[in-house]
Length: 197
Image 1 (cartoon, rainbow, N blue to C red):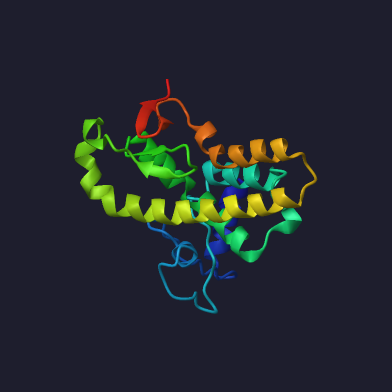
Image 2 (image 1 turned 45 degrees about the vertical axis):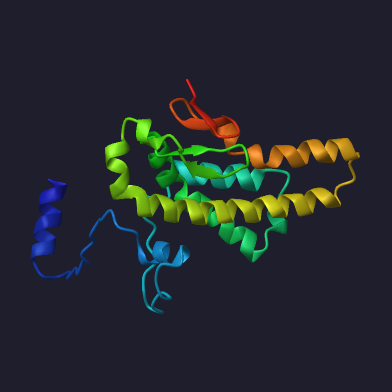
């Protein structure tokens, strides 16, 4: 009964609701394009809309880095913050490329196109994604390097024994390497790759 009354009330012309059209697309928002340097500045009156790309994958990377004691939250400068934002934003796309067997995690802290990609199941799809994979990896690895250097800088300020500092320094590039999931590729030794089972 309540619903009929509301419909009648709205149809009487007492309330004029002008709803804006909302369109859902798979393409990045203006904010996302700007973040990766793909477009001009946002319009002053433009609405900032978060897309579905800000998923659990990206936010888990964000939380892992923020909660990491190597970069305290109050020590994030603008460059480090933007790098972390880039890594989080690109995380879902990186995961997709890993699942398609285009990309794996190297021991030096970089994500790389698999050298044996011609032997993978989805190789026939790779040419269609190649340019985007290369763009994502370039931005992602640059951002990871900035975080790596920031962590090294902060590590130098800590009062630790030399061997403890060296141990931590060697672990920094392996952060993403240790997060490889089942079915994804990783570098087991220089130029030798394997799938995690």
